[in-house]
Structure formats: structure tokens, C-alpha cells
View 1 (cartoon, rainbow, N blue to C red):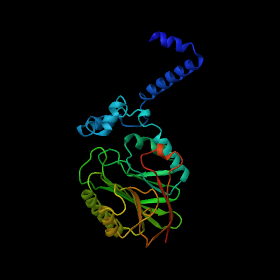
View 2: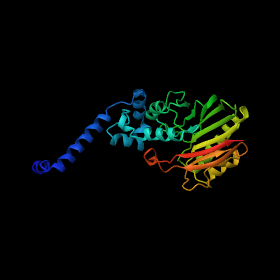
View 3: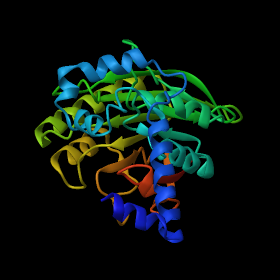
View 4: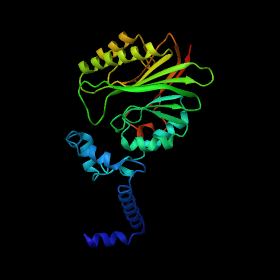
Length: 288
């Protein structure tokens, strides 16, 4: 073995490749021990020590990564947050619904999105709210916001909520009410119940505040499924991406009485496949 290694070392091209590989390993191991700045490492470690996470796929990945996830190290997050931030800053949307924003992402994204304010990024228990909303602070003033748990089967790792934000245009004083959610992947029956809970919350908020409504997120349901139909039936909203090629379980619903949609695009460019297992949806709207 050592003889083979020695012979390979004598070949300049192989020596360069071996040194490069060694350098990559060293850099990776350093990054796997550098903590993400401003993150509550104690809270992350407590989360990973719970039985629910240890027995989950997320806990398995952390084990394969040498517990880099549970230590909240820089390379455990990879380049996904940076690509996500570059996509958001590039399109510069007025409002964004984000899904699966875990503690590491929650600590990094605000500094990467200087033109945005995060809404309900943290839950009352101090944990990261997995489905926050972000809006451009130069465009809107936040009137009110909140979130409500809509889980049927409790998931400690990925809380299921509907987050909402009432935004007022600083120039026109028109209001936009944004709802964001991430439904369960368990059963269609559970998602039907989540559709009912989501519609009930929308009814409550829109009774208190007037304005155009957008509901977006990962619904884990496809066009025509029972939960999809139930949500459309109870709200009367239209799905902006229902007829868009490539649409799967992510949707943007809107009140067609108050909103006009000019375009809806599923972005498969700009390295989006490296940012998430879902492609971002960008929708252009006008308030009536």
C-alpha cells in the first residue's frame, strides 16, 4: 500500500490531485467545527437530543455528518442559505413565504437579507418558527402579525403553522394580508383538517382587517386532491400556479376579487436545485 502511494506521489499530476483532495478534507473538517454565528447552540443540541429527532431522518443525517448538524456548524448548512439569499435578493420580491427555516437558517438569513424584515421568525417557546414571512421594509409597514399551530399529528422537529402578516403599503396605504403555511406529509385526511383550520384562521383575520389576501406555502398536496379542493372550496381562492408546468405541492392562492396575477414562474435556473428540494415560485400580482 505504501509503495503504491509512494509511486503515485512521484507522478506530478497525481501528486497535485492528492494534495488538492487533502486540502478539501482539511477545509471541510475545519468548517465542520466552526459554529454558525449568533445561533443558540444549547437550544439546537437540546432539540437533537430529543427522542423524536434522534429517531428521524434528520437525526440520521446528523449522525452521518459526525454530529455537525447538532453542533450547528457552518458546513452542516452547506451553501443552501447563501443560494437562497442570492435568489431572493436577485428577484427582490415584496413579500416572501419561507418553509422549513430551522435554527441555523434562522440565524443566518436576516443578515443576508438586509432589505427585509422577518415576521414571526421565533415561536413563543423560543424555537425557530419553521414558516416565517419576510417583507421589504422600504415598501411596507407591518400592521399586525401572528401564527397558529395547525398540526393534526404533532411534529416536534418541523412545527406545522399558519403564519400571517398584515402589510400596509407606505405610499398607497393599501393593505396586503400574507398567509404562509407548511402542511403535514402524513395523510390526506389530516391535510383536509389542516385546510379547515387554515380557512378558519383566514376568516378570522380578514374579518378584523380588510385587504388583498395571498396564501402560499408547501401544502404537500397536489391539484385535485381532497385537501386542495377543500381549501379552495372554503376560501374561494384561486391557485396562481394550478396550470403552471412543473407544479407539485407548492401553491400560491389568492383572492381574485382583490388581486390580479400577471405571471407565475417556477424557477429552475439560478442554481435553485442546490438551495432546496423544492423550486421557488415567483408570482407577479397587482392589487385591485
